[in-house]
Length: 186
Image 1 (spheres, rainbow, N blue to C red):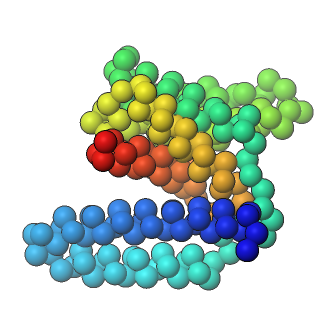
Image 2 (cartoon, rainbow, N blue to C red; image 1 turned 30 degrees about the vertical axis):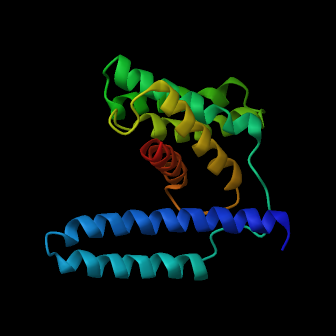
């Protein structure tokens, strides 16, 4: 197996495992209140996720990675949203809206630039990280760490999940989950 194929499989496996563990934790919480419907829903949703990964065409056959000069903007978007959300107390949705609207105009600065066309998506991925609660991401250093991990996942997933909505939020979720778990262990 070549390196690119192994990286792709590892990225897909990581996303799949995190999704199933997250669903399991939700079902476990509801199962403690004797809600068998939650357990049944977990089994059905996990089955659907596994089938989707197995049979849907979620990626191209080429192995491309996002450019480092693009994904470096993910932590920057996370920092900006976190500062607006926490320091200026604008709230996560308004902070995300302000940054999202602002960066949507970047491609207009130079309509010929492919670099500027790719920046809004990377920055908005970071915005999803910055929207996290202070109880989950308590400091700016944790925001930067989560943004960097989300950037890594965005870098690796350029040709994954094509045509499936929620990719940026999923990559941000993975970054926040990994940093949260590292903080729990440490």
